[in-house]
Image (cartoon, rainbow, N blue to C red; front, side):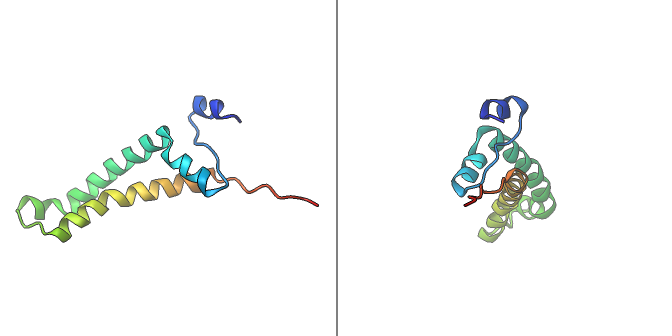
Amino acid sequence: MTKSQDAMQGTAPTWCTWRQALSAVVAPRSLKRSGSIALIVGSLFFAMNQLEVIMADRATALVWAKAALTYLTPLVVSNIGMLSATRKPRPTSHT
């Protein structure tokens, strides 16, 4: 399947090298999807875990760091899932 066919069908590009993996992660479609997941899941976790402390004006630097990680974690998990689903084996050379 060509890149243009991938784009039309909405599938993530396959990869076998780390450079290709990075390209897949930063592709606009992948960024939009993983960013949306991070925003939704991160907001739910933020509301459950840190919102009360922040609204009570008791937030410390550690609480704000945890809040950032609350959004970063689903972003990373989403990208790992996408990469694991789209990895293709390296071509083997037969001699």
